[in-house]
Length: 350
Image (tube, rainbow, N blue to C red; front, side, top):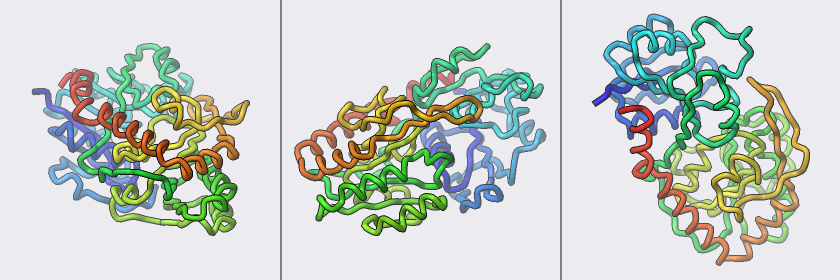
């Protein structure tokens, strides 16, 4: 049995929950926790990892990396190692490395002038979605595998839905350019709510931007929830998730909603259009905007009127909601840990 090392985070962020899922289902021999609370000001949850090897406050040092890599065979990291010496040293030791990347923050896309001697490409670049996967495959020396984040069914309420009266959106900590499409959700609700007298609308968020806060002030029909004690509580009541994301690959809240059997309305653009049913997708405006991260990113905006109409259609059509509910349950089974764990073991060489 190969010995797996996992680098993950112990604060209440999406990336931390992703790491927690790996921890629970892949059973690493060694887990290094990273405390970035001084940067993101989020609470810590080291108790999630009862047998963690070490918690590092701030970025791991070279010494942390050296000691972490002792007596392991495989290294798994999500999004960034924080210190690229970790990959360099792992290569020197013959340790198999896998980075589950986020295209938006993939440093290997940077021009050579921005790289250091530590920029050793991992053995596996694992794509959690198909978003820009072809561009990553063109990187020199890249071995890319598609590896979706499985749905953690054991931790989620299994819902039975017969109609849509409660529509919800999860913004969390809003990313640049309103990645989650929170402003589009608010705008669509304002258009449709007067035709949906029995509907409830809920917005979950933690740190609203001034623009989102101003839009919320003009939408009193939307309930705001600032924090929930447990992730499962986000999905205990809502019947349709509305996530008109403007850009991005993997979305943990979308995964979790589907794991509960809740259908999700999303923008009709990649990667959503690569794996979600057509009936779940909302048309986008032509000519997407662009912005630069490590590389150029397209920003899609949903057609607000079309989204408002879809809310109204689902409010009025129980049979359509029931069909989408069944689709969600089928997708959840295909993307469960039970279904995908063998794929992880194959890619990681465990």
